[in-house]
Length: 144
Image 1: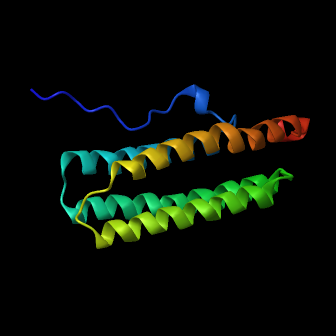
Image 2: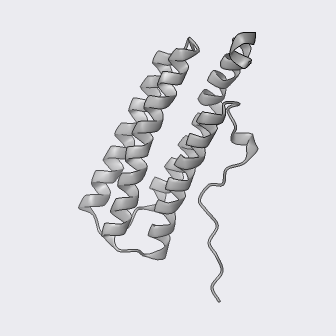
């Protein structure tokens, strides 16, 4: 019997941004990142790993667009800087995906270290701020 691998990152309530929709999307991002990690660790074929990488990249684009729409809907004052951080991460992920496609069929561990570090620090540093902003500026009608 083989021991089950631990996921790269586990969702915990400490990662909550206090907005259910965004928390659910963050959980999905973590799940996709963990799926890519698991494929890589298992030694799946390059096609399977590539599909997992593409799914993570595509969902990251969707999530960032959703998150930016949400921030606009609550008049989040730091939206422009947040959107720039998103653009930067997408460029990094796209670069990693291209390097993977041109490489030997393995994602280097440094890529997973980067994903885990960036996602955790971004959620706990930047994203939680829009959650607090949203809570602080909710009207009684919006909560009803």
